[in-house]
Image (cartoon, rainbow over all chains, first blue to last red; front, side, top):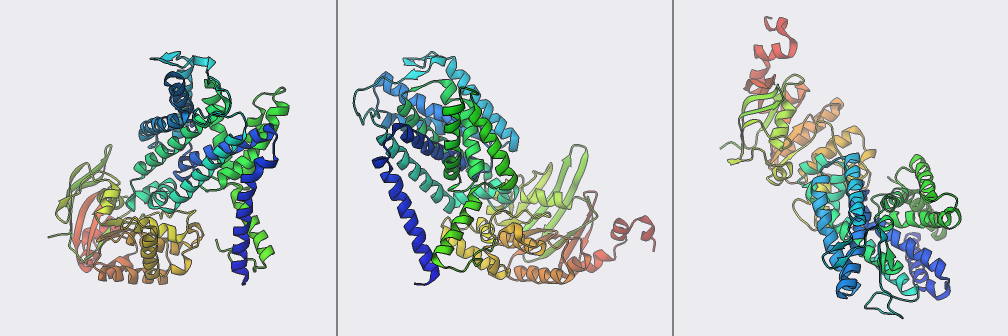
Amino acid sequence: MNPGSRKKTIDTLLKIMLAVFVFTLPLWLTSPTYLQILIFLFLFAYLTTAWNLVGGFAGVLPLGHSAYVGIGAYTSTVLFITWGISPWIGMWVGGLIAAIVGTIVGIPTLKLRGAYFALSTMAFGEGVRVLAENTMKVGPCVIDGPRGISIPLIPGNNFTAYQFVSKVPYYYIILIMLIIVLFITWYVSRIRPGYYLAAGGEEPEAAQALGVNVAKYKVWAMALSCFLTALAGTFLAQLTLYFYPKQILGLDFSFELAFIALIGGRGTITGPVIGALILRPVGEFARIYLSAVLPGLHLVIYGLVLIFVMLFQPRGLVEPLTRFYDWILNKVSGTATGKEVKS
Amino acid sequence: MALLDIQNVSKHFGGLKAVDQLDLTIEKGQIYGLIGPNGAGKSTLFNCVAGSYAPTSGKILYNGEDITGWKPWNICRNKIARTFQIVKPFQTKTVLFNAMVGSFIRTSNTSEAEDMAMEVLKKFHLADKCNVLAKNLTIAERKKLEVARAMATDPDMLLLDECMAGLRPNEVDETLDIIREIRDRGVTIFMIEHIMRAIMSVSDRITVIQFGRKIRDGAPQEVANDERVIKAYLGESYGAA
């Protein structure tokens, strides 16, 4: 076997091992605390990957994605409480509403450049939070303002109600959701809309001159991103069974997604996962041990990490890590190094 | 029938008349040159044709169809491609990606678009660089990529905005050969250029504009000997000589 194909085999083997590892993890990692940390890690990797469709590929910086998490959570929960509709159905309704809202917000705002887009999405996110905090009831549906909603407990494991006693089902649900969303991003990056999005994000005028209706593709990405984000909103609601506007619609939620993407690598497929892998444990540690001293300290730590990453690896950590992984593969398989270092 | 017919087009920016009641007709298969001093309104006229600006007044007909005020992407789909004076490659992407954005106008299939892009890159001697990031190209290569990317959209008409500025003499000659080759493939060319040697040798017809108005058009030699053109370029005192 020549070194090139040996390298490929090792690469595939490592990926299979990783898949086996994450799928069998709950078998031996039984501590609910650690499982919860992992679930949140995957949840943030998922959310950031969805965010990345707009924030990475379309080249803008949305800072109001918590609004769509909230839309997902509120929609499925309200449908469940008021009419007993299963959250498994409610999440699609939430996704659809989020996609529509995202489109309506995106059409005017995606024409704005740089900071102006970021500011307008931030304002929108905050607007939704204030709206939720000041709404007690919409028709027959209870919103309960700043107090938030707790989902009535159903005893035992109930798949239809999306409620489980153990953390393990949640672990697998979010893991599968993450794999699907990664697949979607990978697929989008390989088809025409993906090329057009990336082109329009980088040089809008040049893309337009090559036949790309840049605004249209950005809105398309925004709708898809909001849809996927809302699905995770339902998941989050079912995981915690209680949520309130400040938590689920807060600005720091939106910021965290941007932080993870920027540190991991914007516009790349694995960047959000790498970002979540690095930042989430740091954030959890800060929250568990330091939140009594300084609430919100984890965001300060994120900020510091971000500054260092931007100074030394402005395109995110995915780049040096990919190089490192490649180097290891070459070492192990015996491929001559420096051959594919072309770009 | 003329391929491109610019009728009485004006473009005003506030009080500035960047293009002022300009008429211009380009026949199919021509290489048509547009020259004039800096700030004469050449690029503005290009931007009006390519859809970046909507003209303040006047009409632009292409193949007899009124395309005045169309959006850039629709102009491109209508088979008019353009390049930019300051090249705008997708810097963080590969040369192949750059060309594929162009060829995707002809197909939605990724591998077909890739084949088409490679074909164009071969013609421009960029095929061996297809995996290089655009930001790592030399300026001459970037200028070539700019034209290649536009050609990947398979246009009938190509607008070249100073595609030779900043090139070395031998690179200018190479570009001139490429331009002639493109024309021989049946693409009509409308170009702005400051390098007189280049535009005089390649153009079938030239229009000279100053302060947004046409001051002369005709064959290259006629234009070069026109007193008003010499004045526009060299100043009043040379006009008498």
